[in-house]
Length: 223
Ligand code: SAM
Image 1 (cartoon, rainbow, N blue to C red):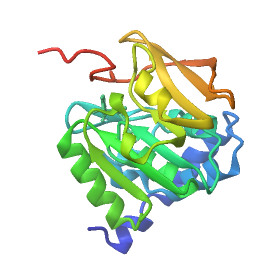
Image 2 (image 1 turned 180 degrees about the vertical axis):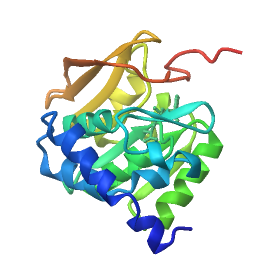
Image 3 (image 1 turned 90 degrees about the vertical axis):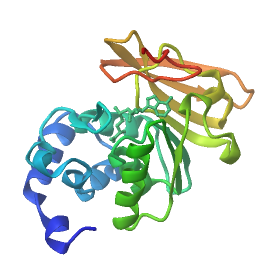
Image 4 (image 1 turned 90 degrees about the horizontal axis):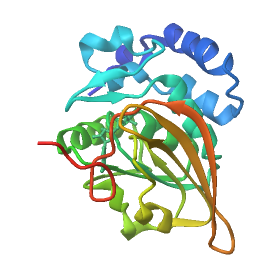
């Protein structure tokens, strides 16, 4: 699916993106910085949009969705405090770019996408790039993926009216969940940590803007 030339292209733009958009904005986790330096973001967007892949904004993908701004990907990944033993559940595979960043750092990533064409092309792309620690699932991610629960980290990459209870319940003791929570136009990145006694500690973060999380425990699909 990808040639050596595809893989080697845009290295300078990628390094510039990491320095100007990630390091200069105080992302400090070396594992996050290394992953963003490595993953070829241009291969997660359409061929005619590759020149935009390293710019400081989201890029449109199929099914009216977006691949998130690089800085937002870095912030959310850093907030999850991943280690090489972490098992992650991601809701909203989209292009698979964020999935690849997670898979560079964590042990295993389960990623749920409601649009089958996005899930299928992300899976093919991730396989072609050699990732063997990712499972892509087609379905309603607001219900999580109970078959492989519990997870040490849960990431929602679409804006939720509130954090779905099913996802909180699939979080392991000591685990972290990061999600954009708020109205349809603007949200706040929220971190939830599940304490040893089962209680949840909630911490609101920066404001952000994501496409909606649509599903049984998210927003309703408009006709
Ligand atoms: N992280 C992705 C990337 O790197 O390309 C971008 C994610 S995009 C901002 C949000 C994604 O969430 C979209 O692909 C959308 O279809 C998906 N989504 C929305 N509601 C969902 C749900 N209930 N279950 C699974 N995926 C959902």
